[in-house]
Length: 606
Image (cartoon, rainbow, N blue to C red; front, side, top):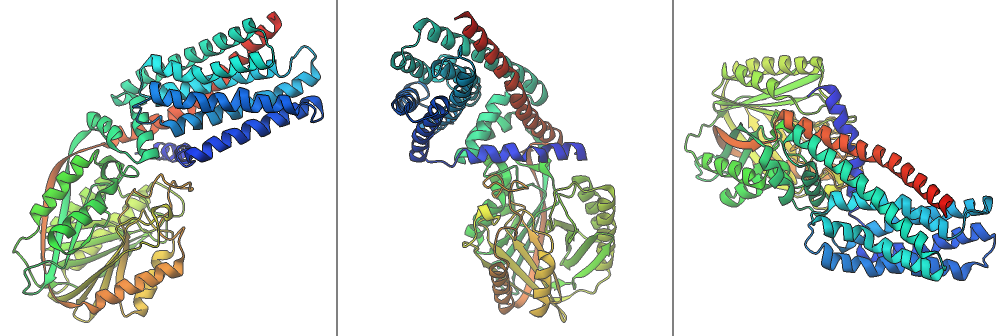
């Protein structure tokens, strides 16, 4: 993925955050907001027009009988009959759309009040209300037609029913011309239907050509996952356009020497835990952790392997394939009781640590305290090839532990990573093998939330003692880590008698898309109390040290054929979402201008 494409994807974060926000208001809050907006807005508009509160009765009629009550009456009818089984448009969102329409209509009333004072030919409140209808109608139509999965007649009814009731009310209460009201109704919705049809037809044709599936179906699935955390709709679409790839996984099993049951299992795989929330492999670290723990009673660590968004698995079915293959790879009897000390090599901005267990080298890579994002797959392939020169297996971990500003790795970053890792592999191959001890522990981080950037997998610590060296591996269930926190944790380890180690995150994307944040999520440490977090870290390391025992290790590398997004498809999807967002925003502006021009022509005609 080029830097240009990467930045376009990141530029979609404001739209991503906006969609997330519309999930929050409750039904009761939305209805109360409609009443408040309609009443206060109407009173304000009439006050601006008359210069006093003499128009209060008329303002109350406008706010309650013309704006609020038609919404409260029509939306349950729409929900019950027109959009009954719609996966996205429930009653709460019907009211949310009415709230937005109310805001636009109030805006029309306020503009109309000012216009009425300046131009005697502009009738208030009738012409002001008509202006609001012309502005609100395109928003209402394109929202319903793009978000709802209902048939066209049901969508059309849902779009016009509330405005129709409001126009009847305003015509009767304020004695407006039935002919004029009818003309406004027909003209505003003809323009709006035409706009919705044109923009959605264009997007369908363009989207099908670029990604091979309906972009509106993809959009509805995206909304269902973002708003209701239901992944089925979007995963069905992703299944249609997925590509098959081999997923490489290395499983390291630790157990007490002479025991028949594992104490800890590390699963290092090049799946990517994205794209967001519970869609695809976003939740795979937790699913892997829970499934393996249930079957083996071991403590499970799932650090982030070398992968990018092209290795996002597309569904829970694919997740289960990986879990089942990993389970088959456990329980082997080829255990060895030797390991090397951990060695560390720095080159430029990169630092690689390598420790050998049996015939497997365990490598962690970081750019901390500089920003780091996903290490590209081709870099991982090159390093795997180098590792095979020295070891039967190599487990490569992208520590994913430092971010301040999102960036794509440049050529120098990649060169530093390759240089430091290749040197670390070579250096570790020359290290003497010795018996080792290990201890493992896990603590939950239930006091922190996904909104704060902490996933449900908690905190896992693996402490290893070889000769006189004690090292520690700390795995946090989160997406990256705020810059500088890794160094503070490593210093705390030293103070606890740990000579060296590494801090890693799982890169889980269950924390993505649920909070309004600069990056679309909070890295570990950005939104939580450092001292409370450090207390948990010291606790889990202490417990792991206390559990030190003579150990033995078994490792196994497997391939699993899975359906993924693929690099080209993910790039096209991300750019398409960004393009659609911009197109809808910028195309609706000329549509509103056209609507206003038609409104002016109707005013002149009448």
